[in-house]
Amino acid sequence: MAILIDASKRVLVQGITGREGAARTRLMKEYGTNVLAGVTPGRGGQQVEGVPVFDTVAEATEALGVFDVSVLFIPAPLVKSAAFEALAAGVKLLVIVPDRVPLYDVLEIVAEAEARGAAFVGPNTLGLLSPGKGVLGMMGGRAASAREWFFPGPVGVTSRSGGITTSIAYYLARSGLGLSTIVHVGGDSIVGLPHAEVLKRFEADPETECVVLFGEIGTSQEETVAELIASGGFTKPLVAYIGGKAAKRGTRFSHAGAIIEGDRGTYEGKVSLLREVGAHVVDSFADIPAVTARVLNRKTISLPAQPNGQTTSGGQPAMTTTDASSAPEPSLRWHTAVSRIRPNEIRLRGYRIDELMGNVTFSQAIFLALTGDLPSPEVGRLLDAIFVSSIDHGVTPPSALAARTAASTGAPYNAAIAAGLLSINQYHGGAIENSMRMIQHGLELASANSGDFAAAAAALVAEYRQAKRRLPGFGHRLHTADPRTRRLLELAEEVGIAGHGVAMIRAIEAAWAEQGSKPLPVNVDGAIAALLVDLRLPPELANTFFMMARVPGLVAQIHEEKTRERPMRIIHPTEHDYDGPEDRDLTQV
Ligand SMILES: CC(C)(COP(=O)(O)OP(=O)(O)OC[C@H]1O[C@@H](n2cnc3c(N)ncnc32)[C@H](O)[C@@H]1OP(=O)(O)O)[C@@H](O)C(=O)NCCC(=O)NCCS
Image (cartoon, rainbow, N blue to C red):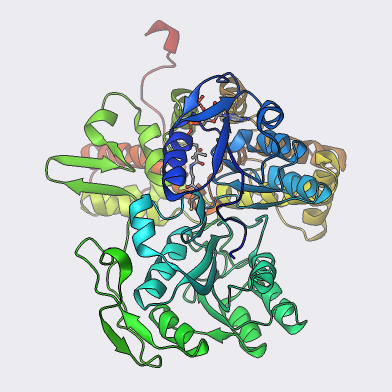
């Protein structure tokens, strides 16, 4: 046996005609997964890899019967409706691969799945794999490699990182330890089947004798595992590694859900709770195979790796045996997913740089570099607007004064730019991140309040007023109706990305006005924050948008300082006059 996927499961693929859907259907089928049908609205009647495509899940079900599992390769904004469609058609397990599914939508899917007695893995999951029996999602890559890497056996794996799921499985198999099922629960803060739910399934699986868990800082998943073990709900040996030991509070550690907030989700807390209930928590990732072998009372076997990192074919253990207590040497090999450089070829997030050049804007390329997703030209237009909105704001902001001051000392351009950037902090250019976090807090309150944005915003404003905290992203020392705010929010509607983020910031503005205070309009930072929430950017990147936008303005200020002013002059912050071009109109260009 295995859990969640085996050769008997009847599998549907939603989004089968898309780029990933089609490619992964081929790999899943090659591995032996019983993929019976696919769904893409408007593509009914087509075939993908010999699999019939239907317009709706209901039509596929009517033709072929109820499916056990549906794997979703559907862009994040469309996931909720597709998941609801599959659940309504009686599918009991969904694998939601896409990342950036809105938190609020995930909460709704949780409720719908619960109501229908169903479950889901993900979102933001690489999927799961039961060696020799089946794979769902993108786990394992090429079928031939997956067959060679992983073989059936007694160890289950549950992990909050996709890449690390396969790494753990690979190193266990390299040490001669077979696997029952390997599961990537997903990298987001809310997932359908967190560790504890996966462990309950491993507990019921006779083939699984022991489980390896890869946890991370943030969320309460590992704490819940400790509770499950303490209550007797999981009785098999658990080997655990917790990532994020060095991460500071408030810093996201690679995945959306891996962030310590307040005192919750800390590395130390998780490790001590797991150790208290008897889990074997290892300090070094490299110790996982040896400790797993020890708790299973087996010896490890080292299979030599081929130059490409794969095992020898057939996985025959010709090799050396080592005592289970001696850990293998940790590998120095690390990974990057930003760009790949080969002779005469440069690729950014998979795209050829010479193909991007002249075909996408700088803003689109920036978004691609940061997130891995190439935005549409329309979203690119909105990103351009964000960058243009913050390019310069006169000589009085601290960053411009710092850059000019450094320039007047004879500092080169790079040093003067750095001086400007170094003065962008909490009180200058730093409100976007805090504003994003406030909006996200508002959305969490709304989801706990049956989706009532107005009530959530009122509660949030009351919370800030009581704590005498300023609302980040509201008010301006000079502008009462910031022209940038209106334009950005207008553009967000125009290009169709205005969603929960924009709705929440507007609800907060209205709630503030209602609570009898003087008007406090959304400022440019608040507008950018709302847009970045709707573009699913992580808050810790927010202020870098301001920095990237401001660099050209700083260069202009530095150049003017160097070419017009004498060195070491006294730079008065407000005693200056404008002598540039008179007001101009873009329509006259
Ligand atoms: C989900 C994801 C893979 C889709 O990417 P993609 O395959 O490049 O997207 P495409 O636009 O080519 O395909 C999506 C398909 O879904 C279809 N679709 C949209 N709504 C649908 C619905 N309700 N039901 C079924 N199909 C639907 C689209 O029509 C499209 O098919 P088409 O191209 O034939 O029109 C991508 O959005 C994503 O999230 N990637 C990140 C995945 C990831 O990293 N996960 C975590 C791993 S650790």
